[in-house]
Length: 320
Image (tube, rainbow, N blue to C red; front, side, top):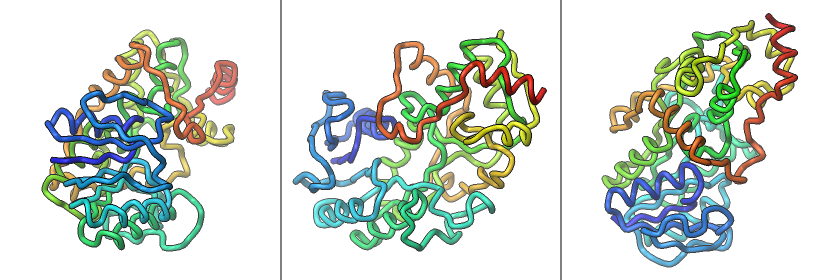
């Protein structure tokens, strides 16, 4: 299969190129050259800014890993409409109008306004791609993506925190359900869907309750540093003490986020999406970090910052 990856050097895009090469596909990756230039010697690399147009050529499948607004996504899909059989657009669960307050499935209403915010922009980008290539677009409504080469730093934050050891602030509720997806699972599934021309919307993340918040932290502790101690604290009190809970304690399903992980995934599972055990993702991500892995500068505006040691100690004393 001839595959064009828009992006291809950072996290999910990198995983898509690697998965396509492993499949034996003929791969072209198109990016600006800011991150990972020359990263994939087995693929054809084309440099450029998608805002200025997409490259010439014909492809069986396109995977758009870095589209965030309807103008550039629509322009790319329009330019490729006569030159590509299929277009996979990496969207987000944030397209749903009622999420995270209510559980959602693929038929739940999505944002239909023009607010310049992440969710509405992704929803508008879906519509733009569909208008350009009707019936040939796979709308991949991904959840929280984790795994090696993660650039946002959410799972890496907790792995590095466990490595420091000592008392680790663990805000409850420990039993809160979570939904995550390994970038490698997502990449392989999108390519398989593209190969058979599958279109439509799919929630591409693990099933509700496949892992809990406490289970994730315990797995991180066990893999990285069993000597670290999880100090569970009242989530309500921790949330009240923080300015940006999701940024300062990444991945935490903090009280007040409602059904943040209540995304129905049966359609994607029926279409072949398989989710590896979270312990495997944690171990592989830690191996990458231990091997010198560093976060790229791409999308550092949404990076999980974590808490410095002094702030964490103060919170532990205040809420314990």
